[in-house]
Picture (tube, rainbow, N blue to C red):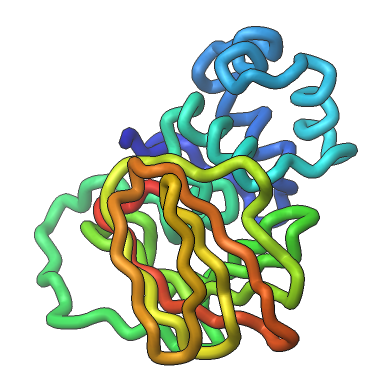
Length: 204
């Protein structure tokens, strides 16, 4: 999936303004993007003006149409690859992401929070710390995206649908799947569900 290498969002921008900015950079009219995402132009207009919250699946469709990952809408300038430097700098042996410095992705209206564990969006693996509140779900529409993913449940009870199959997972359980198979999740317990998820290549 193409990343928004030339897109630099201000840290104070809202989700809607970031979607609008990326759409304009691609010279897409509102009606064209809406048609690509199977939503009405009026609904897309409300999303861009932050007057409506898209579902996770709709937000994912918008990201695909705009050639970016969902996570890029929540990323700050640090996630944009820097311009080539005149001198080659040594690549560090490792990157540390401190617990209090994770980039947070909060999906509007769902209460689901994703914290990026990988240093940025320009790696071969996208790792996230996902928190799903009791009763919350990724929505009735399943998600489909590129790559493969594996999740490890640290806390709570989650029901996961993958294609025509569904599973109930608890602490210590892990699940692996191809991301191209429609999938969705729901917290069916009384506590927050906490899952560590790895996706490769980054596509969400």
